[in-house]
Image (cartoon, rainbow, N blue to C red; front, side, top):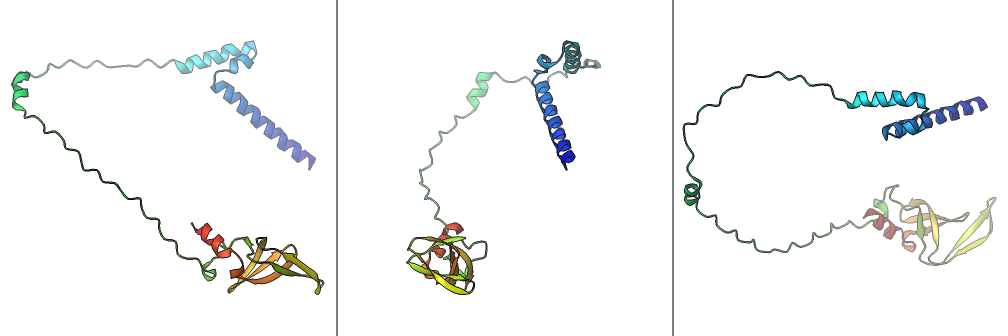
Amino acid sequence: MEAVKNAFWNLVTLVLAGVVVYLLYARGKLDAYLPAQYVSTVVLARSAQAAPAPAVVKAEPAVAPAPATQVAPPVAQVQAEVPPAPEPTPAPAVEAAPPAPEPVAPVTLASLTPQQIPRQVKILKPMVFPVIVNGRSAGTISAPAGMMVQVVRVQGEKLIVQNGGATKVVDAADTDILQRAQARAR
């Protein structure tokens, strides 16, 4: 296992070194990090890439333009013949009303998909959660109004919620589940 880790880190180091060399080469900064014997090779390679190949152009025989048969009228005569353009009239200003927001359908507990059900809800009134240990009641946990509890499951119009390790079935109306689902739908 140790050999695999060493091989992995060796590969990572090699890749990173290659990336650094490439970036230095691309920015023209590699010459400063190379030994003197390699600098001339890099400079020659760059100059070979930079010099464009000479272009070969075949000369075409010159063709004389066809003689003009009609002479254009003088500029003053053309300007006199063109009627003046009418001045544009500004369009009446119309204020556009902002688009009305699309109405969002009211959310019901039955219409919620499992992805739309919030993971946590706030209870709207104080509740007492029974603590069960090994199938026996071991006391209760009091939860004040406004406390966040975990949603375990939805059953009809009821929620199974959990506070710490205590679980309880509560009415959906006693929580803010519909408000949270509505906010997520927007």
